[in-house]
Length: 184
Image 1 (tube, rainbow, N blue to C red):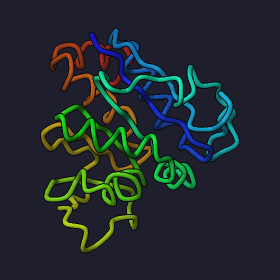
Image 2: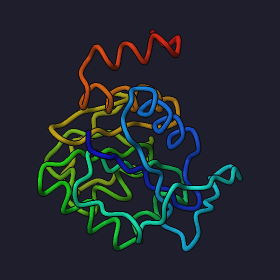
Image 3: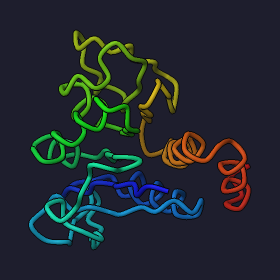
């Protein structure tokens, strides 16, 4: 199974990032947390410091399964300003690779890159950008459109992560993880 990457920038939404990593790892998916900072330490939007597994400059993203962007502010803006990440997202999507974003990141990171143009998506309420060609599907919590999964916000974190598992490993694997977490 290919490795997936969850990107962390100062100001990331902790529950969206860490719940996603936790659920994917429970399903047996190899996941690397990636700091876009100059150091492995990244501080979440609510002051929680986290040490990422790797720095973005040390990762080969060319053969990834998933590229995942948590939300949070200014986390999403910081992700959008990271050229190596945005280049990787565009190329990965161009090849049909899986891309996932939640909360502010669908609007702040994916929409400006054209990744969700002409697609169904969701984002945090009030973040949707008009005129970018996205079919915003509020009030859905999680939306799948081809190779892209988007989530609405913190309350959708587990559903978002379970959807990623379902896309990669199937409905039974997702259901098994949900049951083990007492979600189902």
